[in-house]
Length: 155
Image (cartoon, rainbow, N blue to C red; front, top):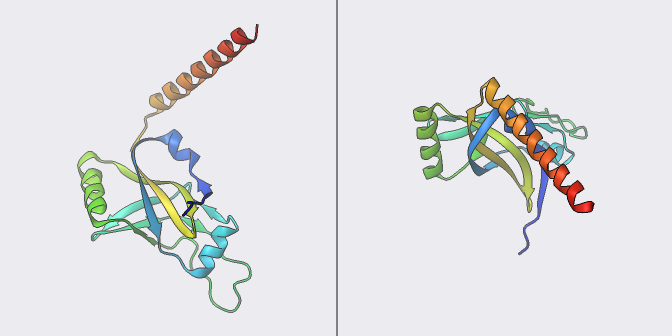
């Protein structure tokens, strides 16, 4: 069976503000209208974060707009707390890492894997301002070196 992956949302801000230590794939508990809204691309994960509470992982501040053609049923709160599905061992490990090393759980992307909606969770450490500047300087130098090498090979 062929895996079809279609990315719905990326959290580019997370790659700038955090140092990603490890990545995990998690399923997410949604209502039918939320799935339809995500298929339409009406989701925002830039301000979202994950927390572990009583052995379960939840995602907070994930904004999913209400589905337009929902009908007479009340739309769920766009910012409601949603449960994430991970293996018990992964949740225990992540909980220990977050508590011990003062790390954060940030959603990096949301995508469809076949018919299932998955969230990629990153175990992250916050970057200081000087770290961000250093990363930008490194990217600029790599870009300029690549440009010079390209010019050198075309001459």
